[in-house]
Length: 512
Image 1 (cartoon, helix red, strand yellow):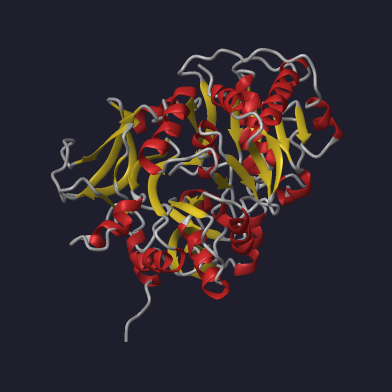
Image 2 (image 1 turned 90 degrees about the vertical axis):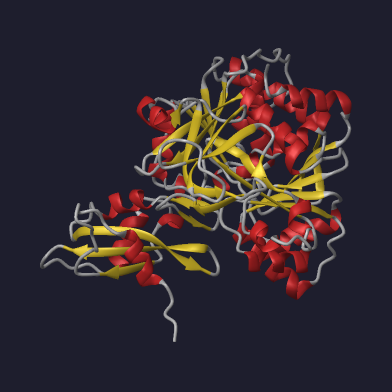
């Protein structure tokens, strides 16, 4: 099987239906989309000399060619490495090298700091700008090759997610994983009609890039905002012109959309569904969103290792305000999706009873097989067929899962996962820094913001600006601390472990 078969089927069913649009204008029908994919796939094999099983990377913002490149790679039997274009050049270089990607597609007009001053030519054989004549030549009409046959377990999507060690790990998502994930959306999250549309305002390199699958399965339209990113006014404008619109948004994006709608009062007639996830959505915020945007919400909980597919809080549950435990359900992440089994691991390694907290573990047809070239991390995370998420939660008597922690130290800011260890390791290389501990602080705008507690070496000096510039040279801008607290020492237990819960307590607002 090959996941690209869903595009071929869509072309056969509705060749003249809108497939990819930019703003309000259709760019490709399914006929043109499929033909372009076939031509590019042929060039990937015959001009770029790529072979089945090779990896190609996409490091660019949302762009119509993003979808073309993905399906062309799959058609040709290749695997895709999606890379957040906002990452630092050193981070991108690591992912390119670790994955063994031989070609990287970029859009230099929007590449920003990621590709400035650093050449990736030493890591990949070709860096191809989708706005260049070189790329246009690769998509020219030619005698197309046949779609490469793939096995269900063959790698399709190598998604890099940071781990608690700070080093990104490549999650191996197969063709079968992706097919089951797309079907799970249609069964558990939302139905899709051929006349519907999805706005890709969140990054295609992450959750939104998984939700193109069910929309291609149903021959629906995929809309790329002209800006290539999330802008609430632009999204609300697009809702005016398209019907049956859905989108995936992080909770902070939902909040910004609500704030914009409160003062603009756009018509919501064209909006069908907002799926939210990637961070906590507070009960007050989702109730406000329901008041302003209407009964159009579904929540999902997933991880890169089980993308978008662990649990779902359905539209019906979110709108059932008469339920006696309505607030508790709104605070939950819903029930297990159909393609997975979800359990809570108790202290003794057995399933925890209802109401008891423990680690969330998952198994099923969408769960990845492991980490790319990292057997040690794979064995530590997958045990006896179960994915150990590292997240803590509990089930109620009706099977609704409530998350207590996305993980002990994980910071979720603006829908992006930020792991403190990665920042700590960078700051500890500064010549003036003795110790450092990074934690998250509640933020109205971002959900959480990054705070670094820093202990300087005796006699050394460094200010916030110096440490900020140091971080900006080494990690992505969105990961850097928003606040630095210089302290004489860090709180520790008897074993020398830093007590981050004490640091978080220091950041809690004081009560009069």
